Image (cartoon, rainbow, N blue to C red; front, top):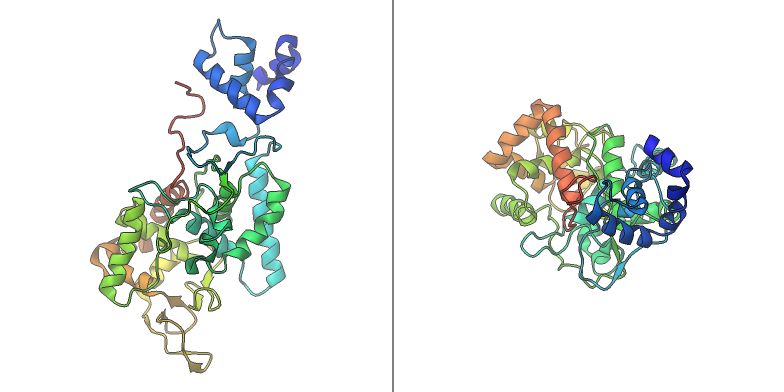
Length: 364
Protein backbone atom coordinates (compact mmCIF):
# COMPACT_ATOMS: atom_id res chain seq x y z
CA UNK A 1 0.00 0.00 0.00
CA UNK A 2 1.10 3.60 -0.61
CA UNK A 3 0.62 4.32 3.10
CA UNK A 4 2.96 1.48 4.01
CA UNK A 5 5.65 2.73 1.60
CA UNK A 6 5.21 6.20 3.07
CA UNK A 7 5.94 4.83 6.54
CA UNK A 8 9.07 3.10 5.28
CA UNK A 9 10.61 6.19 3.67
CA UNK A 10 9.48 8.89 6.11
CA UNK A 11 11.98 9.32 8.95
CA UNK A 12 9.61 10.00 11.86
CA UNK A 13 7.63 6.84 11.02
CA UNK A 14 10.57 4.74 9.87
CA UNK A 15 12.27 5.14 13.22
CA UNK A 16 9.24 3.61 14.92
CA UNK A 17 8.98 0.49 12.74
CA UNK A 18 11.91 -1.55 14.15
CA UNK A 19 10.68 -0.97 17.71
CA UNK A 20 7.20 -2.32 17.00
CA UNK A 21 8.23 -5.19 14.76
CA UNK A 22 10.73 -6.63 17.23
CA UNK A 23 8.21 -8.69 19.20
CA UNK A 24 4.50 -9.29 19.11
CA UNK A 25 4.25 -8.40 22.81
CA UNK A 26 5.41 -4.83 22.13
CA UNK A 27 3.12 -4.63 19.10
CA UNK A 28 0.13 -5.94 21.05
CA UNK A 29 0.59 -3.44 23.89
CA UNK A 30 1.02 -0.53 21.53
CA UNK A 31 -1.89 -1.71 19.37
CA UNK A 32 -4.23 -1.71 22.37
CA UNK A 33 -3.13 1.79 23.28
CA UNK A 34 -3.39 3.02 19.70
CA UNK A 35 -6.85 1.54 19.28
CA UNK A 36 -8.10 3.82 22.04
CA UNK A 37 -6.75 6.84 20.16
CA UNK A 38 -7.74 6.04 16.60
CA UNK A 39 -6.26 7.52 13.42
CA UNK A 40 -6.98 11.23 13.48
CA UNK A 41 -5.24 14.54 13.31
CA UNK A 42 -4.23 14.16 16.92
CA UNK A 43 -3.01 10.57 16.66
CA UNK A 44 0.72 10.17 17.19
CA UNK A 45 3.04 8.69 14.53
CA UNK A 46 3.32 5.59 16.74
CA UNK A 47 -0.45 5.11 16.75
CA UNK A 48 -0.58 5.44 12.97
CA UNK A 49 2.15 2.84 12.51
CA UNK A 50 0.38 0.44 14.84
CA UNK A 51 -2.92 0.78 13.00
CA UNK A 52 -1.44 0.24 9.59
CA UNK A 53 0.59 -2.67 10.92
CA UNK A 54 -2.48 -4.88 10.98
CA UNK A 55 -2.95 -4.50 7.23
CA UNK A 56 0.46 -5.75 6.15
CA UNK A 57 0.97 -8.86 4.08
CA UNK A 58 1.58 -11.13 7.06
CA UNK A 59 -1.16 -12.71 9.11
CA UNK A 60 0.40 -12.56 12.55
CA UNK A 61 -1.04 -14.54 15.40
CA UNK A 62 -2.05 -11.29 17.06
CA UNK A 63 -3.87 -9.98 13.97
CA UNK A 64 -7.02 -11.46 15.50
CA UNK A 65 -8.00 -11.32 19.13
CA UNK A 66 -6.59 -14.27 21.00
CA UNK A 67 -9.21 -16.50 22.58
CA UNK A 68 -9.84 -15.69 26.22
CA UNK A 69 -8.53 -18.22 28.67
CA UNK A 70 -8.12 -18.27 32.40
CA UNK A 71 -5.69 -21.16 32.19
CA UNK A 72 -2.21 -20.43 33.48
CA UNK A 73 -0.87 -23.05 31.08
CA UNK A 74 -1.36 -20.93 27.97
CA UNK A 75 1.78 -20.62 25.86
CA UNK A 76 2.08 -17.27 24.07
CA UNK A 77 4.50 -17.58 21.17
CA UNK A 78 5.39 -13.93 21.24
CA UNK A 79 8.85 -14.05 19.73
CA UNK A 80 8.11 -16.43 16.87
CA UNK A 81 8.78 -15.04 13.39
CA UNK A 82 5.86 -13.82 11.28
CA UNK A 83 4.37 -16.08 8.65
CA UNK A 84 1.94 -15.93 5.77
CA UNK A 85 -1.07 -18.16 6.22
CA UNK A 86 -1.00 -18.91 2.50
CA UNK A 87 2.53 -20.28 2.89
CA UNK A 88 1.37 -22.61 5.65
CA UNK A 89 -1.59 -23.74 3.55
CA UNK A 90 0.70 -24.42 0.60
CA UNK A 91 2.99 -26.50 2.81
CA UNK A 92 0.05 -28.58 4.04
CA UNK A 93 -1.18 -29.07 0.47
CA UNK A 94 2.30 -30.23 -0.59
CA UNK A 95 2.41 -32.61 2.35
CA UNK A 96 -0.90 -34.20 1.34
CA UNK A 97 0.20 -34.55 -2.28
CA UNK A 98 3.67 -35.93 -1.52
CA UNK A 99 2.33 -38.38 1.04
CA UNK A 100 -0.29 -39.65 -1.43
CA UNK A 101 2.41 -40.23 -4.04
CA UNK A 102 4.49 -42.22 -1.56
CA UNK A 103 1.52 -44.37 -0.60
CA UNK A 104 0.55 -45.07 -4.20
CA UNK A 105 -2.61 -46.93 -3.15
CA UNK A 106 -5.23 -44.23 -3.63
CA UNK A 107 -5.33 -43.25 0.04
CA UNK A 108 -4.07 -39.98 1.48
CA UNK A 109 -3.98 -37.74 4.53
CA UNK A 110 -7.00 -35.82 3.23
CA UNK A 111 -9.64 -37.54 5.30
CA UNK A 112 -7.30 -37.90 8.27
CA UNK A 113 -6.65 -34.16 8.43
CA UNK A 114 -10.38 -33.45 8.27
CA UNK A 115 -10.88 -35.91 11.13
CA UNK A 116 -8.05 -34.28 13.10
CA UNK A 117 -9.60 -30.83 12.77
CA UNK A 118 -13.03 -32.27 13.57
CA UNK A 119 -11.95 -34.12 16.69
CA UNK A 120 -9.92 -31.19 18.00
CA UNK A 121 -13.10 -29.13 17.91
CA UNK A 122 -15.89 -31.61 18.55
CA UNK A 123 -15.34 -31.90 22.30
CA UNK A 124 -17.04 -28.55 22.85
CA UNK A 125 -20.03 -28.00 25.09
CA UNK A 126 -22.07 -24.85 24.63
CA UNK A 127 -23.47 -25.25 28.16
CA UNK A 128 -20.24 -24.38 29.94
CA UNK A 129 -17.85 -23.42 27.13
CA UNK A 130 -15.49 -26.31 27.84
CA UNK A 131 -13.66 -28.26 25.16
CA UNK A 132 -13.19 -27.12 21.59
CA UNK A 133 -10.21 -26.43 19.36
CA UNK A 134 -8.41 -23.91 21.54
CA UNK A 135 -5.40 -25.34 23.37
CA UNK A 136 -4.51 -28.23 21.04
CA UNK A 137 -5.01 -30.54 23.99
CA UNK A 138 -5.08 -33.62 21.80
CA UNK A 139 -1.29 -33.62 22.02
CA UNK A 140 -1.60 -34.74 25.62
CA UNK A 141 -3.33 -37.30 27.76
CA UNK A 142 -6.23 -37.82 28.21
CA UNK A 143 -7.40 -36.72 24.73
CA UNK A 144 -4.52 -38.39 22.92
CA UNK A 145 -5.63 -41.71 24.39
CA UNK A 146 -9.34 -41.43 23.71
CA UNK A 147 -10.59 -44.30 21.57
CA UNK A 148 -12.30 -41.84 19.23
CA UNK A 149 -8.88 -40.27 18.50
CA UNK A 150 -7.13 -43.53 17.65
CA UNK A 151 -4.81 -43.14 14.67
CA UNK A 152 -4.74 -39.34 14.76
CA UNK A 153 -1.15 -39.42 16.01
CA UNK A 154 -0.31 -40.11 12.37
CA UNK A 155 -1.79 -36.78 11.34
CA UNK A 156 -0.19 -34.87 14.21
CA UNK A 157 3.23 -36.38 13.51
CA UNK A 158 2.90 -35.59 9.80
CA UNK A 159 2.37 -31.90 10.63
CA UNK A 160 5.45 -31.59 12.85
CA UNK A 161 7.82 -30.54 10.02
CA UNK A 162 5.39 -27.75 9.12
CA UNK A 163 5.25 -26.59 12.72
CA UNK A 164 9.05 -26.52 12.76
CA UNK A 165 9.09 -24.48 9.54
CA UNK A 166 6.44 -22.07 10.79
CA UNK A 167 6.91 -21.91 14.59
CA UNK A 168 4.72 -18.82 14.77
CA UNK A 169 1.54 -20.78 14.13
CA UNK A 170 0.02 -22.48 17.15
CA UNK A 171 -0.65 -26.21 17.10
CA UNK A 172 -4.33 -25.42 17.60
CA UNK A 173 -4.38 -23.27 14.46
CA UNK A 174 -2.25 -25.75 12.52
CA UNK A 175 -4.42 -28.78 13.32
CA UNK A 176 -7.65 -27.02 12.38
CA UNK A 177 -6.09 -25.40 9.30
CA UNK A 178 -5.02 -28.83 8.05
CA UNK A 179 -8.69 -29.78 7.81
CA UNK A 180 -9.47 -26.61 5.90
CA UNK A 181 -6.68 -27.27 3.39
CA UNK A 182 -7.75 -30.91 3.00
CA UNK A 183 -11.29 -29.90 2.09
CA UNK A 184 -10.21 -27.16 -0.30
CA UNK A 185 -7.54 -29.25 -2.02
CA UNK A 186 -10.08 -32.04 -2.48
CA UNK A 187 -12.26 -29.74 -4.57
CA UNK A 188 -14.52 -28.64 -1.75
CA UNK A 189 -15.63 -25.11 -0.87
CA UNK A 190 -13.38 -22.42 0.54
CA UNK A 191 -13.64 -22.49 4.32
CA UNK A 192 -13.54 -19.21 6.27
CA UNK A 193 -10.67 -19.46 8.74
CA UNK A 194 -9.20 -17.19 11.41
CA UNK A 195 -5.92 -17.47 13.24
CA UNK A 196 -5.78 -16.85 16.97
CA UNK A 197 -6.07 -20.17 18.80
CA UNK A 198 -3.52 -20.67 21.54
CA UNK A 199 -1.70 -23.76 22.84
CA UNK A 200 -1.88 -25.17 26.35
CA UNK A 201 1.06 -27.05 27.82
CA UNK A 202 -0.90 -30.02 29.18
CA UNK A 203 -4.26 -31.73 29.07
CA UNK A 204 -5.44 -30.69 32.52
CA UNK A 205 -8.33 -28.69 31.05
CA UNK A 206 -9.52 -31.43 28.70
CA UNK A 207 -13.22 -32.25 28.98
CA UNK A 208 -14.38 -35.75 29.92
CA UNK A 209 -14.19 -38.53 27.36
CA UNK A 210 -17.35 -39.45 25.48
CA UNK A 211 -18.17 -36.15 23.79
CA UNK A 212 -17.16 -37.23 20.29
CA UNK A 213 -19.82 -39.12 18.31
CA UNK A 214 -20.04 -42.91 18.34
CA UNK A 215 -20.85 -44.73 15.12
CA UNK A 216 -23.40 -47.00 16.74
CA UNK A 217 -25.51 -46.98 19.90
CA UNK A 218 -27.04 -50.42 19.41
CA UNK A 219 -30.36 -49.46 17.87
CA UNK A 220 -31.75 -47.12 15.22
CA UNK A 221 -33.58 -44.98 17.77
CA UNK A 222 -30.65 -44.65 20.12
CA UNK A 223 -28.15 -43.93 17.35
CA UNK A 224 -30.35 -41.19 15.88
CA UNK A 225 -30.79 -39.64 19.31
CA UNK A 226 -27.06 -39.89 20.02
CA UNK A 227 -26.20 -38.02 16.81
CA UNK A 228 -28.54 -35.21 17.79
CA UNK A 229 -27.35 -35.15 21.39
CA UNK A 230 -23.70 -34.79 20.37
CA UNK A 231 -24.28 -32.01 17.85
CA UNK A 232 -26.96 -30.17 19.80
CA UNK A 233 -24.51 -30.03 22.72
CA UNK A 234 -22.16 -28.05 20.49
CA UNK A 235 -24.90 -25.73 19.27
CA UNK A 236 -25.67 -27.19 15.83
CA UNK A 237 -29.09 -27.74 14.27
CA UNK A 238 -30.29 -30.62 12.08
CA UNK A 239 -29.25 -29.01 8.80
CA UNK A 240 -25.75 -28.30 10.12
CA UNK A 241 -25.50 -31.88 11.40
CA UNK A 242 -26.23 -33.37 8.01
CA UNK A 243 -23.91 -30.92 6.27
CA UNK A 244 -21.01 -31.77 8.58
CA UNK A 245 -21.51 -35.51 8.15
CA UNK A 246 -21.07 -34.88 4.43
CA UNK A 247 -17.34 -34.78 5.19
CA UNK A 248 -17.57 -38.57 5.01
CA UNK A 249 -17.19 -38.08 1.28
CA UNK A 250 -13.49 -37.95 2.19
CA UNK A 251 -11.29 -40.69 3.58
CA UNK A 252 -12.09 -44.15 4.85
CA UNK A 253 -12.32 -46.22 8.00
CA UNK A 254 -9.44 -48.44 9.13
CA UNK A 255 -9.83 -51.59 11.17
CA UNK A 256 -6.71 -50.81 13.19
CA UNK A 257 -8.16 -47.45 14.28
CA UNK A 258 -11.95 -47.54 14.56
CA UNK A 259 -12.53 -51.21 13.83
CA UNK A 260 -14.62 -50.33 10.78
CA UNK A 261 -13.43 -50.87 7.24
CA UNK A 262 -13.70 -49.12 3.92
CA UNK A 263 -14.41 -45.81 2.15
CA UNK A 264 -17.79 -44.12 1.90
CA UNK A 265 -17.36 -43.28 -1.80
CA UNK A 266 -15.29 -44.44 -4.77
CA UNK A 267 -13.47 -41.08 -4.79
CA UNK A 268 -12.24 -40.76 -1.23
CA UNK A 269 -9.90 -37.86 -2.04
CA UNK A 270 -12.60 -35.76 -3.71
CA UNK A 271 -15.06 -33.56 -1.85
CA UNK A 272 -18.50 -33.81 -3.41
CA UNK A 273 -22.15 -34.57 -2.63
CA UNK A 274 -21.58 -38.20 -3.64
CA UNK A 275 -21.96 -39.36 -0.04
CA UNK A 276 -25.56 -38.15 -0.03
CA UNK A 277 -26.35 -39.50 -3.46
CA UNK A 278 -25.09 -42.93 -2.45
CA UNK A 279 -27.08 -42.86 0.77
CA UNK A 280 -30.27 -42.30 -1.19
CA UNK A 281 -29.70 -44.39 -4.31
CA UNK A 282 -27.69 -47.42 -3.16
CA UNK A 283 -29.04 -50.48 -1.41
CA UNK A 284 -27.29 -50.79 1.94
CA UNK A 285 -27.20 -54.09 3.78
CA UNK A 286 -25.37 -55.33 6.90
CA UNK A 287 -21.80 -56.40 6.18
CA UNK A 288 -21.38 -60.14 6.78
CA UNK A 289 -18.10 -60.99 5.04
CA UNK A 290 -14.74 -59.46 4.19
CA UNK A 291 -12.19 -60.80 1.71
CA UNK A 292 -13.97 -64.15 1.61
CA UNK A 293 -14.11 -64.55 5.37
CA UNK A 294 -16.88 -63.80 7.89
CA UNK A 295 -16.86 -60.18 9.02
CA UNK A 296 -15.91 -60.05 12.70
CA UNK A 297 -15.80 -56.29 13.10
CA UNK A 298 -18.48 -53.94 14.47
CA UNK A 299 -21.81 -53.64 12.69
CA UNK A 300 -21.60 -51.64 9.48
CA UNK A 301 -23.31 -51.52 6.11
CA UNK A 302 -22.05 -52.16 2.59
CA UNK A 303 -23.26 -51.45 -0.93
CA UNK A 304 -24.03 -54.07 -3.54
CA UNK A 305 -20.36 -54.27 -4.57
CA UNK A 306 -19.10 -54.77 -1.02
CA UNK A 307 -16.49 -52.07 -1.66
CA UNK A 308 -18.23 -49.14 0.02
CA UNK A 309 -19.41 -48.78 3.57
CA UNK A 310 -21.74 -46.78 5.75
CA UNK A 311 -21.75 -46.59 9.53
CA UNK A 312 -24.97 -47.00 11.52
CA UNK A 313 -24.78 -43.26 12.22
CA UNK A 314 -24.68 -42.63 8.45
CA UNK A 315 -27.70 -44.81 7.83
CA UNK A 316 -29.45 -42.88 10.62
CA UNK A 317 -29.57 -39.92 8.25
CA UNK A 318 -32.00 -41.74 5.96
CA UNK A 319 -33.86 -43.48 8.76
CA UNK A 320 -34.87 -40.23 10.43
CA UNK A 321 -37.50 -38.29 8.41
CA UNK A 322 -36.11 -34.84 9.22
CA UNK A 323 -32.52 -35.80 8.47
CA UNK A 324 -33.58 -37.52 5.25
CA UNK A 325 -35.21 -34.37 3.88
CA UNK A 326 -31.88 -32.59 4.14
CA UNK A 327 -29.95 -35.55 2.67
CA UNK A 328 -32.23 -35.40 -0.37
CA UNK A 329 -31.57 -31.68 -0.82
CA UNK A 330 -27.80 -32.17 -0.76
CA UNK A 331 -27.97 -35.24 -3.02
CA UNK A 332 -29.63 -33.10 -5.69
CA UNK A 333 -27.64 -29.88 -5.29
CA UNK A 334 -23.91 -29.92 -4.54
CA UNK A 335 -23.72 -26.12 -4.50
CA UNK A 336 -26.21 -25.95 -1.65
CA UNK A 337 -24.28 -28.63 0.23
CA UNK A 338 -20.95 -26.83 -0.25
CA UNK A 339 -22.41 -23.53 0.94
CA UNK A 340 -23.89 -25.10 4.06
CA UNK A 341 -20.82 -27.22 4.75
CA UNK A 342 -18.40 -24.27 4.54
CA UNK A 343 -20.43 -22.31 7.08
CA UNK A 344 -20.93 -25.25 9.46
CA UNK A 345 -17.30 -26.43 9.27
CA UNK A 346 -15.97 -22.93 9.97
CA UNK A 347 -18.31 -22.76 12.96
CA UNK A 348 -17.10 -26.15 14.19
CA UNK A 349 -13.43 -25.17 14.02
CA UNK A 350 -14.01 -22.06 16.13
CA UNK A 351 -15.83 -23.80 18.98
CA UNK A 352 -14.21 -22.88 22.28
CA UNK A 353 -12.47 -19.85 20.78
CA UNK A 354 -13.56 -16.35 21.81
CA UNK A 355 -12.87 -14.62 18.51
CA UNK A 356 -13.94 -11.04 18.04
CA UNK A 357 -16.95 -10.54 15.79
CA UNK A 358 -15.68 -7.15 14.62
CA UNK A 359 -13.78 -6.72 11.35
CA UNK A 360 -10.06 -6.05 11.64
CA UNK A 361 -10.42 -2.34 10.94
CA UNK A 362 -13.00 -1.63 13.68
CA UNK A 363 -11.46 -0.95 17.08
CA UNK A 364 -14.33 0.51 19.07
